[in-house]
Each structure stands twice: as structure tokens, then as C-alpha cells.
Amino acid sequence: MINSLGIKKSPKDTKIVVAMSGGVDSSVVAGLMKEEGYNVTGITLKLYDDIKSSEKGRQCCAGQDIIDAKRVSETLGIEHKILYYQKKFKTEVIDSFIDSYTAGETPIPCVQCNQTVKFRDLFKFAKELNADALITGHYVSRHEYNGGSAMYRAEDKDRDQSYFLFSTTQKQLDYLRFPLGSINKSETRKIADKLKLNVAGKPDSQDICFVPNGNYASVIEKYRPQSFKKGDILDLNGKKLGSHDGIINYTIGQRKGIKISSQEPLYVIDIRSKNNSIVVGPQDCLNINKLYLRNINLLSDTSIFEKNIFIKVRSTGKLLNANATIQKDSAVVEILQDEKGISPGQACVFYSKDNLGERVLGGGWIDKTINKNLSTQLTNH
Image (cartoon, rainbow, N blue to C red; front, top):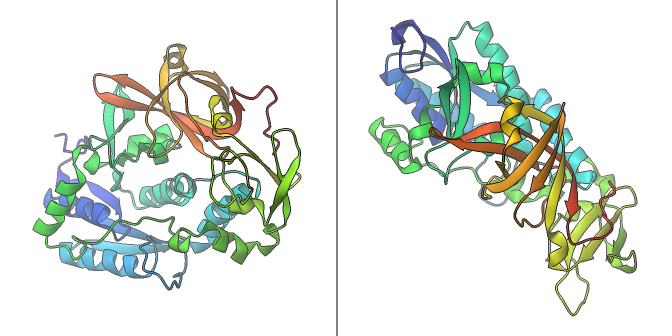
């Protein structure tokens, strides 16, 4: 017998771990699995201590969310465990985020979190429990493919989270399951109502969990106040136009907050951490046509890159036509259509299209960008 998770066991004999963040998505996944008769254990990660904020915000993996996950587990009648990963999270996610920002990059801590404490460490813990699969509430699809498993974008493209999961290893993907890959968010909330879960109307988290109210600078000021050093604002020729109060206040493509008078709008074109300066220029200077990637992870054979592929350089961005040359653990990507404001530190995720949908081929971290409208490249981290 092959059950709905593709495992050759009856549901009642299939032990699964559900990663429960305390939100509606993972709670519904736990409920669906319980309804189907699986032996379910819910696991919630405590990743940081509660952040006090004067504004209302919704973060995951702390305080109220842990309470909500426990209540859902009690409602469903499933076992629930809490893993205390604050030290791991601080070292591998928060510190990495700060290092990247102070180097003039634009980091994506949600990918780092999935890559480390969620999929690596939780994967290991689920294995230690002798679970047959690790289940999450991510909106991404998994299909059996050529005797193995492959990742695809979710059916609900507005909720698709594949961009954040490019660093998933093949071994992890074979073990993971994503029941919400074929479900729209509106349907998820209807299921939560049907199951009478206390989180049915709970809003989605909007900010990075450890960044209160989206204020990145406040986090860096807390952990590394010496990062706020004054420096120069330069034009494309290296002429000083003004001063800034710290490069961590700027990201590539930023227009507001530069405070330099000019006949045409100025944008942040480059951030130079080595000499603590930022370079500004016109919008055309944000056009990027080539990327150099580091630390790539592949979920496909390299032969698929011999033809045109697609990439995403932002979680909410569109698929862009591209060519990619894979070089061991790095890659060179040529973008075949205009895209502005790509920054080192962001992720570039590879996709292809087939009869099953839009397949995730892997991805990597952007190390350097090449601007087609600049005769001399500026990136100097």
C-alpha cells in the first residue's frame, strides 16, 4: 500500500513530524495529516526570545506562536514538542544577516533559516525520532521525478515559496512533503475553520521574525553599534557629493534618504564596504545583465543548463529568461532581459518549465553583479 505521502505504509503505521510555527499554514497541515490517520508529532522551534515592540507585528517562532502551536496540537490530539534553538539561530541566522548587511549586501535570512535550523537540524531530529517524513506548511510542490523527487513552484503563484527553499538538498527533499503545494491560501483558511483551529483568522507574518517592524538598522545597532560609521556618498566618477551615517542604512536601488540635490533622481548604485562609501547615479545604472554566484546548490543534472533557463532574483519577482554556466560550487548567469537593482547577498534561483509546471533547479547567492550601462564596474566589496 502506498499512502498519500508516497510511502509504502498505511497512514496509521506512518510516523511523521510536522514543523509547526504557530501559524495557520502549518496548523492546517497538521490537521490534514491527523484527519488522514497518520501518526503525527508536531515540532515547534523557539528561535529567539520575544522582541518587545510598541507597534503590533506578527513574527514566528517565539512567544504567542509557541502557545498557538501547542493549542492547535491539543485540539487535534497530537503530540507536541518544542526545540530550543536560540543559540543556533543567533549564530547561523542573525549573525550571518548582520555580517552580510555590514558588508554592503542585501541578505535573505529566511533562506538561511530554512538551510540551517529548519531543514538541517529539524531534519536530523525527525530522523532521530524514526519519522518516515518531515512535513511543512510551505507553499511549494514536490513530485516524483525519474526515480527521485523534484521541487516545483506552488499552484498558488501568489503564495509560492520556492525561492526561499532553493538550498534544500536532494536528501532533504526526498524526505520532505509539502501538502499545501496544490492548495490556495483561501482554501487553507477554510480548512482551518472547518477544523475549528484557534489560528484560523490569524494574520500572516510580514516581517523577518527577529526584525521588529521591519527596522533592520535597529537590529544591527543592538548587536553591532560600531557599524554606524559616517562615510562618503560618491558619484559614478568618484567625486564626493555628500556624507552618510552608515552603509547599513542603504540598499542597492534605494532612492529615498540619499539627501543629495540633483537635477535627476539619484539611486544607490553600489555599496563599498571596504572604504565605507556608497555610489549614486541615475536609474539606468541599475540595469544588471550578468551575475556571479557563490555557494550554489543544485537539484537537477547540470545538462539541463545547456539550454535557456529561468531565474528569480527576488521572492516576489517574475521569472526572467537567462543562461547559466555552472562551475563546481559557483555559477555565471547571463540575464536575457532587463532587471534593475539586483544586489549582492540576494539569492538567484534557477527554474525550468515542463509538463508538471515550473521546476526548481537550485540556486546560489549573488556574489557580484555586472551593469550593462557602466563601462567600468563599481562593485568593490
